[in-house]
Image 1 (cartoon, rainbow, N blue to C red):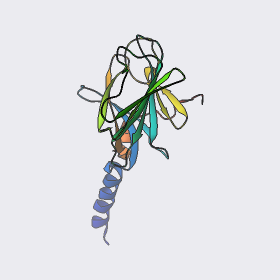
Image 2 (image 1 turned 90 degrees about the vertical axis):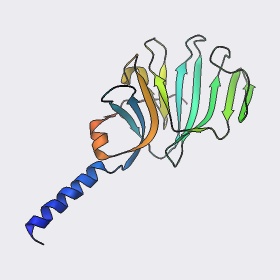
Image 3 (image 1 turned 45 degrees about the vertical axis):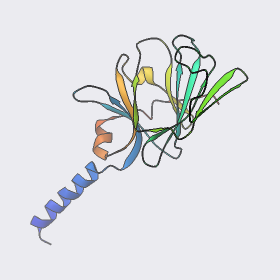
Image 4 (image 1 turned 180 degrees about the vertical axis):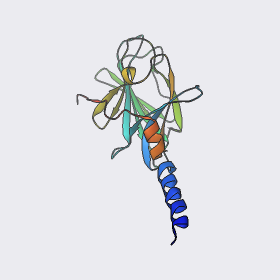
Length: 176
C-alpha cells in the first residue's frame, strides 16, 4: 500500500477510536447551559446505585435506590426514610409497595423506568451523595452548589471522557 492511502486510513481509525462511544458511565451534565460540562463515574460490574440525601425539613436520611438497565435507562427500585410528610409519601400508589419496619419506611417501585432526571445541587448545608460499589461521592463538593444537573446512564467516547470530569477517584468508603 502506498503512503498516500495509509495516512487517511490511520486518521480515520484515530477519529473512530476517539468518537465512538465505548464506556458506559453515570453522568451528571450541567443543565440549561450553553456548553455543558459532563461529570461522570464509570459504570463497572454492578448496575445498582443509590442517591443519599438529608431531607431539608426532617433532617433525616433518605436513600433512593436505582438500577442501570441494559438499555442505559434508570430503574427506580426503592426509597427509604424515617419520617413522612412534606415531600415523602405516606402510602403507596399503583405499582408501588409501602412498608414500615423498625421505624424505617420503604417505598418499593415495580417497573418504573426513566431515561434521566434533573438534580438540583442545593446551596444549603445538607448532605447529598452518590453511592456506588461501596463508595460514596459527596456531590456537594464535586458539583457546583446552586446548579442543576441532568443525571443519566450513557455511553461515552474517549473524547467525551477526556473532555469531561471523572469523579470516580473522589469517593470515600461508605459504612456498611
